[in-house]
Image (tube, rainbow, N blue to C red; front, top):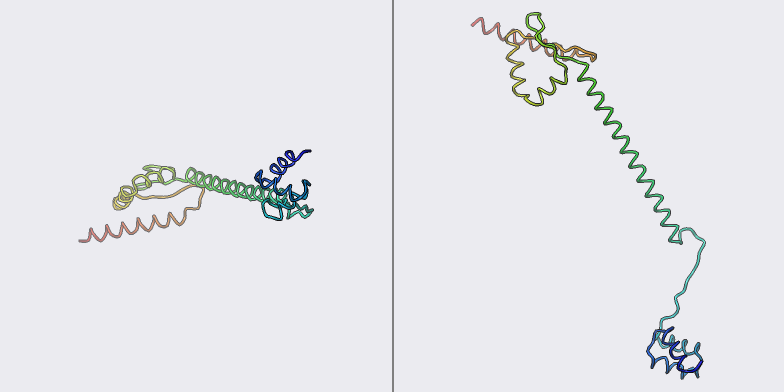
Length: 180
């Protein structure tokens, strides 16, 4: 290999200018390896990168990223499982509410005669849409002898007691008004 080829090789491998490579080669008496060492000592080229190898799991990036991915997948699975459980609980709750509203009724009666029998879902819908009108209608109707009773699968004793007390209170108010 002649000097020109050696200079070109040094320029290519060391990343230095043509002039720097030629001077280093002259100092090294034409020895390519010595010229490279001279360039490194002069700080004109970077020292070769050092590599190290390890069998330690924590020191190997590809294994750490796999472990991280596995942990992220587990967390994602846990979140999906929690989401499924919440959906199942929500559906069960909706099912219980639907069953309650369709298996229980509000019975409206006046003087012992049946006026209407409404499923609780209809009563709930009426109170959702026009609660203020429905509430006033119930209170006013109590003064005209209309009674309300809840019947169905659920234990409606407390609700029926409340309706009985409201009817009694309306009767007392009516009696007091008639005394005047």
